[in-house]
Length: 126
Image 1 (tube, rainbow, N blue to C red):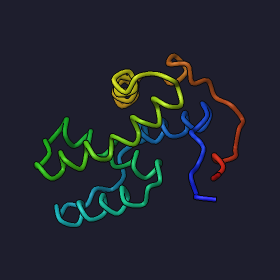
Image 2 (cartoon, one colour):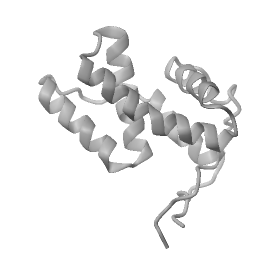
Image 3 (cartoon, rainbow, N blue to C red):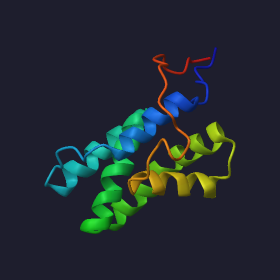
């Protein structure tokens, strides 16, 4: 047993994409504290926390701009989300990036093919 989890199914992917659409949390004003908090979320490896970083940095990029370090963190955080979407939907990473951008810009998850389901279980670790 090596602790590799299964790729998210559509229900779990929907929940992940909902994180990208949620309102931004309370933003730390001090740059160094904001960076540290984001680094901890990315380092956790938890896709939901990584999605929060992508959401918050994406919105900050669109409103205030990002420092070089924040731009790097945005790219590094976006990579596992893009990979997960691509694997789960069996699409290219470019297409997955487009899906994430559409979701971040408020596209309807239902219209993107993510109808709500009743699945509650998280993907199992294998």
